[in-house]
Each structure stands twice: as C-alpha cells, then as structure tokens.
Image 1 (cartoon, rainbow, N blue to C red):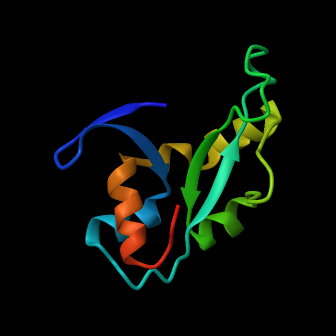
Image 2 (image 1 turned 180 degrees about the horizontal axis):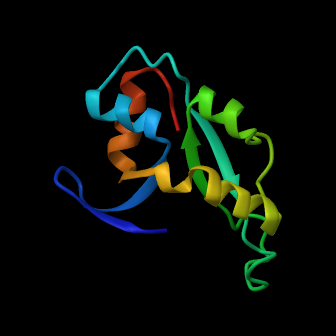
Length: 113
C-alpha cells in the first residue's frame, strides 16, 4: 500500500478509487447516486510469498464501473490474466486519495467502509 501526505490528516495510507467516485469525492457530492463497491485483488499467483488468503488490496468502484468491467464484489480477482485485463482496462483511470478522507466522506453520505 502506498502513502500520501494529506493536508488534513498528514501521513496516511492511500485508497484507490475509480474516476467517477473521485469526482464525487472532490465535489463532496452527498447524493452518491453511483454507489460504492469494494473490489479485492490478490497477487499470490504473481508473488508466491503472498500466500495468505487475507493478502489482498482493496479498490473502490461505482456501480457503473462494476458493470462495465464485470468486476466481482463477492470474491477477490486472483488470476494473472484477470489482473492484467484489469490493469489494461481501467487502472490508469484510478485515483488515489487519503484513506481517512475517503472514509469520512462516505460517512457523510451514509455509507461505511
């Protein structure tokens, strides 16, 4: 996981969110019509040392991105082919934000992370 220097919270972990959620976050859009979905990605078939089932990264996507990219919300993306497909399709459109700011934002719109 990466680190960000947040002007509000200081040194914090980052969270990756889709560009739609990032727009809502920046505008503090409290209507939140897009929804927030957690997608987990496991890298253990890329790096054998990551063999603990709890080893995964979490990314957040709106409902539209979940449908468009056919992302699973019930289990981690795991195969190398699927991760490469993910990276090529939309990873460059992801944004990083302070995890605490993102959690606070979602508490204001009625969602908890």
